[in-house]
Image (cartoon, rainbow, N blue to C red; front, side, top):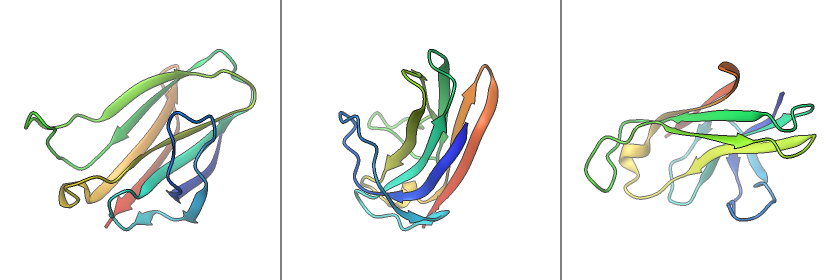
Length: 120
């Protein structure tokens, strides 16, 4: 597993098979509506394995007024090599999104990659 890039990216179409393009390699991203940030990781020999991911974010509330927990999920690796984008985009209100966002990729309970992007 290799971290290919991290920082600010072009807008990503989640329905596309193409990953977003790196715009700036950075640990700090200005919080603006629509800005995409995160990291791309590459797996070389893991076809069929499961990636678990977590995005830890600053505290904010969801539309039901409840504290939003970390974003979590799993993805099956479909081919070798396999590139995976883990990140998010900024939405209104912006102020409660400012702060550290940590993206974590794990497999079989072991953390393989972790990057923190600070939204300012």
